[in-house]
Image (cartoon, rainbow, N blue to C red):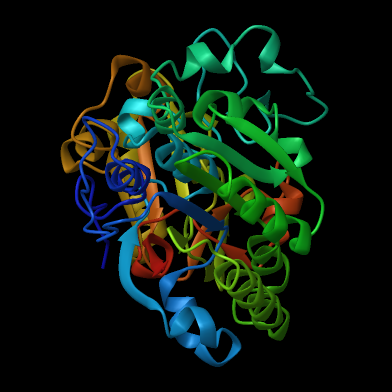
Length: 380
């Protein structure tokens, strides 16, 4: 069963605007119901890859977070890091901020773009898009962090150094001060120190190792559970040092599933018929077709992949509202002509063009509950 993003009421795009409403920013509305009366400082801890179902299944490894999580949010579509962090940072659904996938089309470029690296994708291709696709122009909407800073709130982003001036940060997470973190303890300390600045403060703190562990070892591995225990300790260490007028919000950008039945695009000639470029990621593919091939590609992919996948035209997906109620012209140009989402334990991999990604055990991107539902833990 596919889970529709709950834009406007309970999605990641609604979290920062709701937090700003609690901090008294004019024009912002608490869309989620955070109930943060009297709070003047908010720290949002983003744990990459912490799905709500995975947290429930591993409650013994995370007793602190499990006992304090009361709500569930949805990611947007696709349920992938670049899209989710952009929704969090801008307060907008993907159809408005335009970061619509892991690999997406950029008009004027033959190769697809990887927004996490802000580079064109392809073997040996290291062309840096910062030179001719400025992040601030690719995603021109003011971010929620910029709106907060403009309202007089002290805004800080605490994350690994490489994220400070990355293309994705400049596009969707810009605003306020950046503080590099070098370890889990440094992340916790940086979050607390930043939280204490100014009369009102908003802190965004990012932790990424849980997602990496899930990709490589699998989300049901002992290694993943061990890493979750460290995340639980991280959240508790921040919570124990919160100022009296502060709240900690812990959430995630997506969940994760373990792949059992991958289909290799590079080894299946019938899947390649009519396809000009293959974007997205294994659980949520953007298929850019040759002229006039959309209907044939939809029919062929659905016939070959069967009931464990859904294959839709771009117009169907937009009509379904997966990218949000509004999809800009710029976003439309980046979305595949055809979208393929996994509904079971499968994925469409590319062992030739994407060998490392094809070897990963854990994946995300689709609209299953395991990938879409993320926890919302509010600690005062």
